[in-house]
Image (cartoon, rainbow, N blue to C red; front, side, top):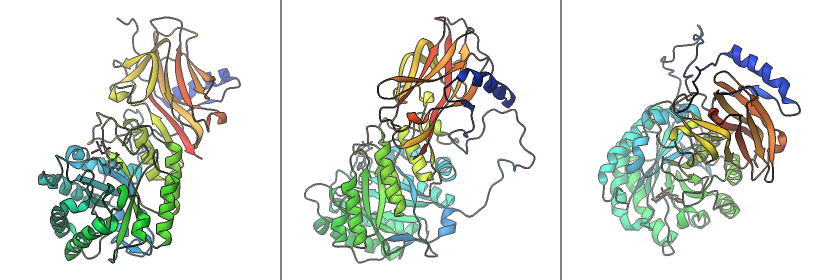
Length: 511
Ligand code: IDC
């Protein structure tokens, strides 16, 4: 039985400010510890507990804000040259995320979840990945249409664009289920063709050595596109390209004759780089409009780590060319591609703490800000491994977490450590809330960072009475390190003393 008692949350500004005054003089040469200036990871997250009364001038939270939506502002999209443009002829770049296999993961795609991303991420497009041949795919499970139409309706209500993706994969060639595709797209275009929100993606990723542009994809497109155009004369249609939608160069040499077509390029930053960008450059030079309707920051398996540097290079490249991009995938599977951690409440407002490392990367790629978050604790999932923490003498804290149901608790000389590359980032700041249970004078929380060889001390946070939330600025030398990690150590005297931490994230700016 633990001997300590928990203290109540103390978050008043006055107290925090007096804390800094206590902390600062002890810092010596180390960078200053500053009170949280950065907003919590999610700008839209409602403050959970605050004693401040709402300002009189603020509108009530429930007041709807009827400003024009993104689709309201941009209307019917079309293609001019290689560029997607809005109704007024101005270039537009859509940025968003894709569902995972929608029959299984469509339950995550609620109105609230889409609204969260629209309002907090500036998401402007959502892709519905409706698998074809899978057990739950359209061919065997046409009932998936109900999920598809529900999500389309949400997107229309929210004023964002929506891609309806015929997600061929193991079926290799789109010709295999061409008749189903014609039926499906005829029906969908009849239902929704009048809405400017709709984008059709007619074959996710043709693949396999026998599947060719001229022998399979083109003949398929030549039947599906007219079926759509009977009902919908002008919304955008995205056509997949050979080799898992990578060979846009081949399509560029032999394009299809309809207006408002774009061609799919898919990449996974851990697996694909400059050679694929060269293909895009070639295709653009031949006048082929490109739409990146699927990209991952991980490996092409859908798993593996987040490749920050490589992903950043890709996003920069796409943004410079105003090429639209859609991240894979809005899912809770334990794989690198998943945007969400498990146990998320998709009907609630969520914060960055609910996102995986890849999900955080996707959010800030979509939002386009210089500020970003490299990782967030993920303690709420109660899986340190999914949060990618290395730890020693550290466990969950369930009795008095700072926020949510779980925090972390570190015993004497124990630590929590999180590795992430800092190569493409600068101005690193570790955010955390900490507290002591049974702390004695002289106990501290040590913050160190790892430079690939050594642990470098940043600061020691002193004993506090109650939860204290702050940012610890890391020195400039912590930027640009491939094998970077940051470590939080309980430097306490007694075996029974615990250091409690919660709301941990690493904020930074993109270089
Ligand atoms: C992956 C999913 C994974 C699923 C697998 C097979 O991430 O959970 O088990 O499909 O259904 C693609 C595909 C996309 C893949 C993704 C990652 O369009 O369906 O999802 N990927 O492998 N092309 C390249 C990578």
